[in-house]
Image (tube, rainbow, N blue to C red; front, side, top):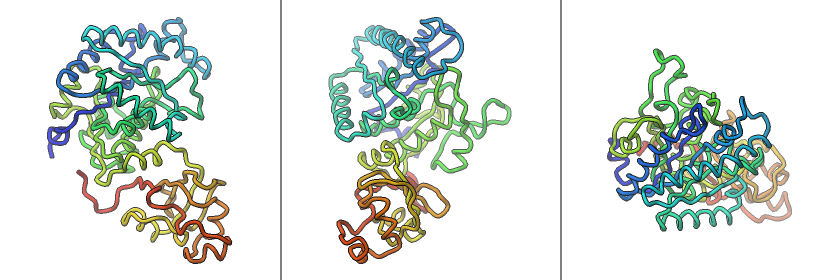
Length: 382
């Protein structure tokens, strides 16, 4: 399929733009922001729904306060965000206002979406804003976020939002042309990868960890975010954010940036929430038979397939399933505690009551609460 065919039915788009694109020597680059707003407004005229995940608050506040060098502590970053967030929104509001469009601000932390009820409340709010024709601008709530409740960077926040609204496409606007086969600091050797059909260990290795001086996430972060988005059945594109007309180029089907194709076996919204939003409380090592049952056949995890248990998790906690090599293959909500699973691992389900004195479930993790995060072998991509 051509890019034009893949993106032909796209209507609901997440556009993520990083600090490296939005900021310059004098803080916010107002010309680039005006350019971005003009392009998004043009897409709105064509009938596209666009949600913008925008960085820039900390960089804006830091510049506004005249602080040189890097901010070293979380309180400093939070304070800079408190100053910069208002200015960032004012700039966006003024720019979209020229096109007759209203903007709405949504600030999120990880704890907002790990709670299923709050997750659904956010979803309802975002859908209402889209129905009203409001341009929603989302950022991490940097003024209150600490390590325990941080997304890490806006690449992952955009991936979470894509799952929340069931987006048709995620465009990550960055300071490079896309994903290269090696660090693009050496342009003579590095080659742009225009298409990624599957995020393999080789693709992950090609992504560098380095972040820009004003940004949080390097290319590694963007590839990991792509992994989450494509697991939801959503295409993901990394593209040059400062190129004029880049959004229209992408939607016209031009070979711009790097396109990550969605997984053939997509996860539904709830399973994406389990896989990529909830933080794992432990690990369960499973044998090859169980791996094939989970990945190839879509079955539940039974105690007979469990080889080892790591951690001290409780009933209902999210736990990662790994294969014999330690590779994560799935995450699910357990029906038994860590200690209980240690007692019944390797046994048939019919033996659970004999060992524990009770049996509430036949499965360690039921398939309805299990999200497989690797592609079944032999499956073709869409």
